[in-house]
Every structure is written in structure tokens, then in C-alpha cells.
Image (tube, rainbow, N blue to C red; front, side, top):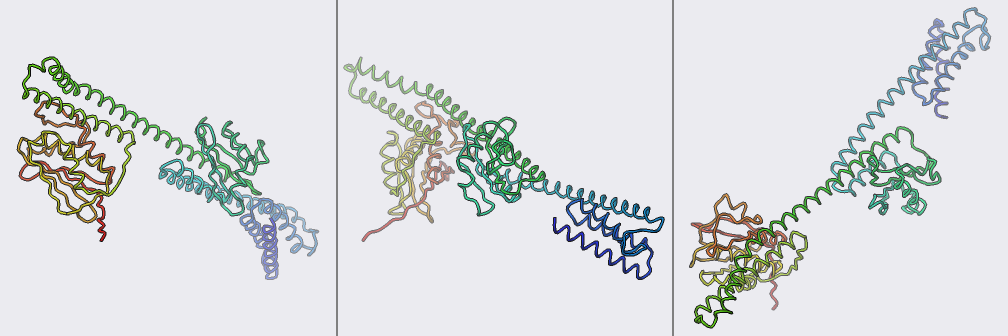
Length: 503
């Protein structure tokens, strides 16, 4: 206000000085009047309040009368036409100043509209890149702090209760406790419950330090935001930007909630589909070994005395094979279930790969005696960071597959080596191999391809899928390739350990 007064006074004095110069030089009175009109126009442009243009219009007429009409230096005008001149001068000055004020206000509104559009676009981009609720809150608060230069506190809604507040400070004058005390939280809870604004500058809890508004979409409230008002309340333009940003933020919170619920529903549906497939497949494939076990056991109980030793040995062998197949199936099913439920707990240690392979070969299919299994180690001591029990299961599954799908007397080669900081395990067979169009799917759950197993027992297609899940959980990789001239190679990569030699 005072600065506008100084500016107006200075311009009127300058206009009078220029008018006196024109009068001294003998310029026409119209030129002096135009100088005053121009001065009033400048005052209208550079001052903030319209009252200065009105006052300057009156003062310019009085100054012209005082300085340039006879008698000089008095407010008496003896000329007959002077009153009309003064009136026209006042009207011209007032109208031009009014037009200047309108143009200035229009330009200001256009500038504010452009600024608001830019702010909203920036906010929208920040919110689009936000990945969760916390990032949405941080993006919203950072924009508001930058725009309003006021402290911001945000409470998210969790099951119709307020979460712990997140405070974003524009200055160091306030602490978190200043705007999150019991009284302030009471106002925030009221806003959450009633979906209405409250706090400073409102009729509800006006004694509060902050103005509280709901982050909402229609009737659903996703949180409450508080703005420390202090001594300077928000003007209409700031409030319009504030409401627009809060609307964008609430929509982002709603989209995040919908996306999270959709993802959770997809996971539930996937798990249900998995359980359904497991149940359907298991119920079909368990019948053959269970029927065989129960039938052979019944024969031994009923006719055991009439069987010779060779027949008894064969029946016991069949029961053993079927029971081992069931044990391996159950182990795979339990592991798959733990992985899908996120309950696979790795116990990582640095173990010798040779020991893991030896332990796995002790538990492979009994028909391994019909094949030649060879182990080649390039390193005398090769350590890998792994869960030894799970990696034993991986090797058992791959070797069992090689035994099942290759003819008798074929060779299964297991090679290990180290390269850089990686440990490699390759399991090669010299069977018929896997067609190229099937390689991409061999690790898919329930995929069995077109191979037939000699004993007619159908594989569930869980083994290789489980192997990939376990190896990936170790931070490693498993790939399948061709063994030249024929056969298949499964190569496992694991983080290598360091061998420490103590002398």
C-alpha cells in the first residue's frame, strides 16, 4: 500500500513538472492535459489497487487547475469553459485508467491460468511416475510446498483410521510436533469422518493451526491433508490450485488402490488355478502307482507263500519303484506350493558342488544302474553359494528326467567348472534331445511335451518348472540346449564361493 502511494505521488509530481515545462515552452493546454492523462494511465498499470487510479484522476484535475489555469496557484477557475474541461479531463483519465486496470487484471488472470495449467501438468506427470501410495504423497506434498511455501501434513486413511502423519516443511520455524499434536489430529479425524474441510479459516475448529481438507473421490476419502496457514491465509487463486492438485492426488490414490486390488485378485486367481490343476492332475496320475502298490502288496499277503524268490523280489522292486516315484512327486508338489505361496526360505551357505552332486546321485531313480553316469570336475574344490538341500532336488529332477527319456546304456555326463565369479553345472545326455519348438516351454508348469515314459507313467511336468524357480531364487540361471551330435544339455549357473586354504 505505501509503495503504491509513493509511486503515485512521484508520477503526479513528474507529470506536473513536465506540464510546467510545456507551459514554459508555450505548448497548448491540450498537451499538458495529455501528460496528466498519461500519468494516470501509468499509475493504473503499476499499482495494485484500483483506488489509486481513481484518486490520481481527481488529483491530476486539481493539479492542472492549481498550476495552469488563471489565476495561477489557486483552485479558482475564472474561464467559462474550464469546468467542462476539468470534467472531460477527469472522465478521460478515469476511463483510460479503468481500461488499463481491466487489461492488467485480464493479463494477470491469463498468466494465472497458464501457471495453473503448468502446475497441474507437472503434478500429473509426477503422479503418473509414482509407484505406490508413499510416492504419491511425496509428489503431492512437494508440489504444494513449492507453490504455497507452507508446511504440509498428510494423513492416509487405513481402514477408516488415520495413519501416522507425514510432515513436509517449507521452513525451519515449525517442528513436526507443532502441527501433529492431539488437537490437530482431532481435527484431521473429524475431516476423515465427515468428508468436509475444517480447521483454520473455517467455522469448524477455527482455532486449529492448519486448514484440513479431504483427499477424496466422490464419497471415498483416501486421506487428509493439512496446510499450516499462519498469518497469511490462502487467496482464491492458491485455493483453486490446491483443490485441483488434491483432486489429481485422490485420483492417483484410487488408481493405485484399484491396480493393487486387481493384482491381488490376479494372484489369487492364479493360485486357485494352480491348485485346481494340481488336484486334477494328481488325482489322475496317482491312481496307477497306488493301484500297483496296493495290488502287489495284496498279492504278497494272499499268495506270498506260493511265489518263488525271484517273483517276490520283482514284486518288491515294483513296490519300491512306485513308492519312490510317489515320494519324488510329493517333494516336488510341496516345493512348488511353497514357492507359489512365497514361503520358500533359502538357507544359503557355501558348499562343495561335488558333495551336492554325490548326495543327489544317491537318491536318483533306481534305474540309474541301467545308465552310465559320469562326473567331471575341472576344479578340485568348487564352492557355490546355495541352499544345498534344494540344489540336490534340482539335480535329482534333471538326472531323473535324463534317465526316464533316454534309452538303456546311454551316458549321462555331469560337468562342473568356474568362470569369473560364477559356478557352472552342466548335465548332458545322449538321448533323442528336445525339439527347438519345445525348448521354450520345458520349464513351464504342467508341460510334458510329447515324450512317453517307458513305464507308461505320465509326468506331471513339475520337475523342470521347480528347478527354474529354485535356481532363480538363488540369483542364478538354468538353460537348455542341444548336445552335439544328439541329446540335451541343462546348464545351471550359481554364484561361486571362495575357497579358503588354511595352512
